[in-house]
Image (cartoon, rainbow, N blue to C red):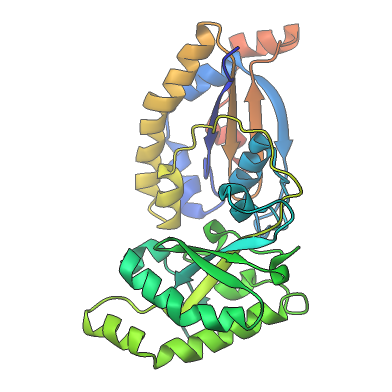
Length: 313
């Protein structure tokens, strides 16, 4: 039997005033058509302050990983097949912290224009400092390195999706339980401030890299059985991070005409499917499970609109 199709949509709604205004006139006929044929399959209620956003929790459950709101899903251990069971690891993302009078914000690390050569050179600069605390660093991608070490076991870390464009101080791990990480942050900022690597970047007109973000920490007791990944469009999320709500509304209309319409047609033809809508706080899920008579009647005569669901997300 083929896998059930799963469409998982991050940032389907946001409590931001701009998003609420964009929702007022948003028409999504294919989403309404799809919801009329699906059965509610539960909610994952959370808070905007959770270290793990709802879409990451939903993806973790889909994959058979621990789906904690506290930021303890071992994403790095899952993504790398060469990480043995029980070994604690994490992702390290080089980034920039912009220090203001009353805030410290992190722009999207993808804006740093960090290529593989620069990233590897920076890793060589920082690796000895991490090694002093028993943490090994390995290159994975320009803005993502793999860290391994016992200090990463059980460490609760905030997702990059929570931190980009926001004040990082609200998302730092608890100082009492992450003294090593806090000290490394301070050391890296002082080191990079005057390091020749940073001077060379500045001479080339490239953005400064003066910090790092550690995320996806933990260990896997055993690797879950592989499953097909859900379709997980990023357009809404990217527009929301920029707070460009007109682009967000346009992205929703494209999703409605594309992935949502295809899933609705699949369900109408008798196919099995799951839909997960995620906001800043919570997630709602629907499935092609059998519906009660009351649910079938509601599907015929009632409409579920995103506008009506926004408070639950």
